[in-house]
Length: 478
Ligand SMILES: *[C@@H]1O[C@H](CO)[C@@H](O)[C@H](O)[C@H]1NC(C)=O
Ligand SMILES: *[C@@H]1O[C@H](CO)[C@@H](O)[C@H](O)[C@H]1NC(C)=O
Ligand SMILES: *[C@@H]1O[C@H](CO)[C@@H](O)[C@H](O)[C@H]1NC(C)=O
Ligand SMILES: *[C@@H]1O[C@H](CO)[C@@H](O)[C@H](O)[C@H]1NC(C)=O
Image: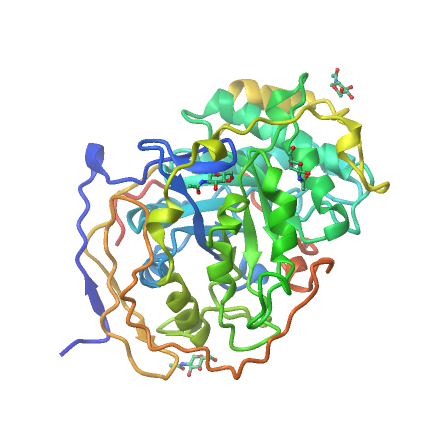
């Protein structure tokens, strides 16, 4: 008889032999495994338990190991290999959570800003926040996470360039990319990729990607390493054409850096059936895109969840979880991971005003100078910054009861320690179905940003965050 508390006996040796994912690197327009050269496509979920308001200076999504363990086990079962986390606090200890996701075969893409005061670049007047105060947050996140091998990359900004942004916002954003990459080059053992996550504002989308991906001779480090697009244009049982995915694929076919959906999963038609998964990872789209991340893991007020964490003792896998799992189970992983030298050998264009077509979009690359204190940080490292490291994940249990969408308790959820990236299981055995009676809604490929796309970049709350603080290195999980 299986008790509600399921036992995960996964033992990972400590010290020199901690299993770790192989760091990924950017080659041309693909992410590749730095060890064997295999292509890596993101099969991901945006991870924001508690929603954007669930974040405080004392608790972020990667600071509670018990919750991470529960979620990592259910994500493994789902078949994903990447999470994106929006709001993080550098003074908290993230070793347990990072190590759990690492052991689960799950990479992390992290936003460096948070909504606390001093934690973000003000899109309406970036010069007021482009300062050493902001860089304590940005470089603090780099310090905190740089030692985790399953760190895929950092987002320097999320939807900073939108309808509310001031004209010169792009050059400040590109300067943040530059400063982060200069910091990493000087203070990290490996070249952690740095990218930007854009709202799906079709009028300026191509200008935005061109602005970030072009090569600037006098500031080569300011070039973004990857580009994320928050896109909600496929709703219900839409199609490649009706959703405008065909236009996106054509538009990004010449990108010179990896491009992926940093958010997707329109919920105008419920439950979500995720038929876009077959398009996104199909032969046409994978030449332009490196996968994507479904918005989002937990059910919040905006109803984008795959699971519902009703209270601290129970978690329910919603119908959307089952439907997404079912779609992932159909992917051809051999094709998805096979390398392609014409993808990895593309070269950047040189920056020039002719790359920008829209009048309202900034078309020069006269980047702001690095503030002198920030320059000191880059040269010498951020003083007193806590630095994380992978720790052992051993003999762990999840105390939560797990239910499926029919309310049935599920007892065979297992946390497995992986030596490589997690993959979907084609024998997922999910009893899911697209039980929506097929209302197929589609939005044209010319939509501007959606409600969903503005959930995260959102209006900052004015709580003062503690900057310093101690960082405890825990030697084991429980
Ligand atoms: C991509 O590049 C090819 C070859 O240079 C060009 O013919 C095509 O118009 C470009 N497509 C886009 C969308 O820029
Ligand atoms: C390799 O990539 C190129 C350019 O994206 C594409 O045209 C070609 O079909 C790909 N080859 C394979 C075998 O997928
Ligand atoms: C948890 O919440 C979901 C969604 O609101 C609901 O369907 C489910 O019955 C709840 N489960 C439990 C155990 O309370
Ligand atoms: C670097 O080059 C850009 C584009 O040519 C130019 O606008 C900018 O002023 C140059 N910056 C410096 C510091 O020379």
